[in-house]
Image (cartoon, rainbow, N blue to C red; front, side, top):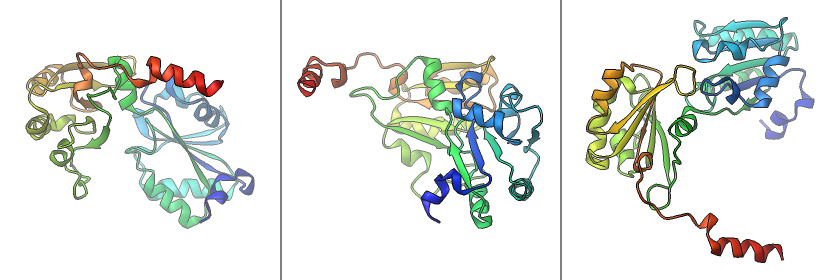
Length: 265
């Protein structure tokens, strides 16, 4: 399949748009995503994790379908019917659709059927979580690498991607879909990060009822159990959460400022 063919909307009579609705805050959806939801005559959204207020911005004449109880086959049947009637489709996912959005199998089916699609990115919980904590995730000499991952569950981890293997890097780590296994996660991380490593567990990040707790690998499990977080929570691990001292970046140094001045002369 030629990439140009996928990107050129003018070649198609309809398009399926995979749209990231963001982490929860109604204002964190992109302008493009919001516009497409308003314009598409069919809106398929991925259950309660997509704010209902986002979906309510759809055209009053649009058909709106909660796909939480639908199988992949049933979703594709609806999209195929829209394709036959030349109707654009807004397929709305929480966060960013490219990250744990299960769009891969949907895209595979669309490509088999020759149905055009585009992906509209969204804000994922990791970056909303950093904003909630008012922290930078990449600090000089502390961490310049961010790992986005999950703990093994119904979805098995590929070879080389187990948590203990990733933890050997001691990079800043964001762990999705795994708060119910927090004690197991802590046991796997302590040998690499140390028991004193800062951790934040953030529940329903950016939603009106967002909550969270910050601790260390030594005490975070007890703190989370006291909060009662069992799902819809992000785990952030790394020294950037409580960094202490760190050097200023080159970006705002006098040397870099002089270099910029020379480039503009």
